[in-house]
Length: 33
Image 1 (cartoon, rainbow, N blue to C red):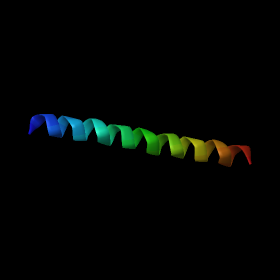
Image 2 (image 1 turned 90 degrees about the vertical axis):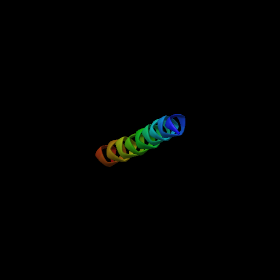
Image 3 (image 1 turned 60 degrees about the horizontal axis):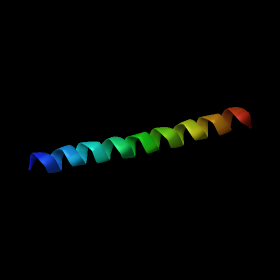
């Protein structure tokens, strides 16, 4: 179902954003101390 695929793509995008945010937080912490 195309709707299901689109939903999966959007969901995957959200997961990717969370992962990037975590990486950014880790990098900031690393630079600070």
